[in-house]
Each structure stands twice: as C-alpha cells, then as structure tokens.
Length: 333
Ligand code: UDP
Image 1 (tube, rainbow, N blue to C red):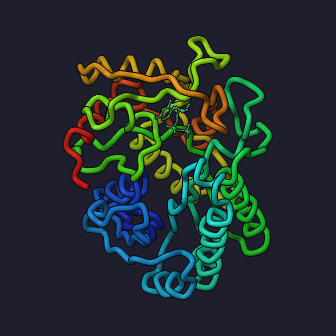
Image 2 (image 1 turned 120 degrees about the horizontal axis):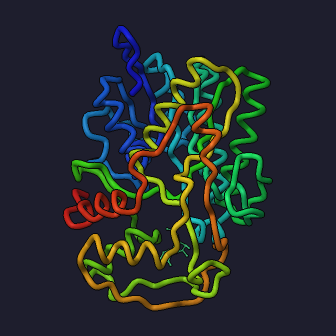
C-alpha cells in the first residue's frame, strides 16, 4: 500500500490507533512493514486492538506527554483518529467535545511543529456539511454543521488551513461518511459502549443481545421513509489514508476529500440485507426521529477518485454486513 520501490519503511504516529478505524489502519501499516507508535487514552479504544504496535497511553490534552512521544522517533507523518464522535453526546456536552477534539488537536499540532513533523492525515466527517442541500454531497457543498461534533471537526479543518499558511504544515482531511464493517480475519471490529450505530445495533438484535432494533423515524422524505446513508467499509477507509499519505509525499498544502461509497442505502434496506446475510429474524420498533439526523447523506467520491486515485472495493452492503457479522459473532474485545 505505502510501499515504494526500495521498500521504504515509514515511521508513523497514529493518534487514536486503539479505536475502531485507527486499529484497522495500524494493522495495515504493520502488515506493510512500517514502524507504528499508537498514542491513545483508551477512553473508547481497546488495548488489544493495537497488535504489535507500541502503545503510549496518553491523552492529547496532556501536551507535555504528547510532545515527549513525538520526540521519541523521527516520525514521517501523523495519522489523527483520536476524537469523541457521538453526535448526541456532543449536543449534551459541547465543552467536552471542543476541549477534547479541538484543544487536543491543537496540542498535537503544536508538538508536531516543535519537533518539525509536517504531514498530517486528519479524520474529519460528513457532519461538517450539516443539512444537505443536494442529494449527493461534493466537497464544494457549504459547511454548516448542525451539531457540536461536526463543529469541532470543522474547527480543526480551519485550524489546518491556518497552520499550512503560517507554519507550512501539509494535511489531508478525510471526510468520512458512515464507517462500517470489520477486517477479513475477524480480529478487529466495531465495539462501542454504549453502541449507537446502526449496523452494530442491527447485529446485536440478530444475536438476541437487544430485543429489537429501534428505527429512528419512518417519515423521512426518502423512498421508504427511513434515513439514507452512505456506508463505507473500514478497509476502504484505510486504503483512503494510504492514498492520502502518498499524496502528501507529492503535494504540499491543505486538502480535503470525501471518503464515501457514493451509494445511499436506507435503514430499511440495511435491515433487509442484514436479515439475508445473518439468516436471523430481526424485530424492529419504529420510534421518533433522532435529533440532528438529516434524511439523506451520500458522498460524491469523484474528487478522491481523481486526485487520490482512491476507489472503494469492499463497500457493497453484503461485504460490509458479512464482515461485521463475523466480528459480532466472535468479538475479541
Ligand atoms: N439508526 C437507527 N437505529 C439505531 C441506530 C441508528 O434507526 O439503533 C439510524 C439513524 O437514525 C441514522 C442511521 O441509522 O439514520 C445511521 O445512524 P448511525 O448512528 O449509524 O450513523 P450516523 O449517520 O448518525 O453517523
């Protein structure tokens, strides 16, 4: 993936590498022979998920420890996945979100400047767009987040623009749509406490861990009344980061790309596919809409295709659901 002729091995710091997406990235980097240091406060991540990477348990709010970690190695780049990411929580406690996601990132950027690491890949989100004005969202769509989570990610994107101008930091912000699925070997998967995401919740119901899937709203202006989302396999997100790293090798500046499949599926369609893949009956209860949920969120992936040469390969619903099902039947943490 990152290999270049001559087998160059990179030193990469992965902040949030014990979390769902970060851990998949770490696994790939290690498979490709790179040196990986994970910095994670383990608030939502799992020690078991980092494999053979060295783990520094630290919070980005601990500026001193962050700088000390950056001084241990001549890092070629930083991949930054560490963030609080639950929309509803961010509505209840915006200070915590701004403190953790914005101030924490500022500490990281300051330390990177001090030790002269000048390449960053940042995990952003489709939530920066707010209420979609069109069916398919490209990167030109206005950014008007409707919740503090999206606002913190946009604040960091803007900070990265300033940092590029003032200090020459090069960065790629990757705006994820709905990350889903698990690695092929069943070693890593999505495990949140409590779980709020659709696919893990569907599978919990399939396993009898929850009595029924609660569908939040069936009166949306979509073909079947349930929300439409763009689900992107976590392995495809990992590919996107690899492309972004290569891109930063050739391009200096500040860049943003959507990472989505470009296909929208409704909650009802995902549920139907899950019944087929799992072979289990899954009961549902329709509830009121969840605050802050837009009816439809679908990515344009044109720019990432053109500039990064990135293309999703595993983001059909069956690949997503069968890999997630394998993990949920036998979670390792
Ligand atoms: N959803 C649902 N039941 C659940 C979890 C999610 O109906 O238990 C719906 C949610 O309202 C949204 C879609 O599934 O329309 C995806 O939600 P998720 O939390 O997975 O991701 P989000 O789009 O909020 O980032």
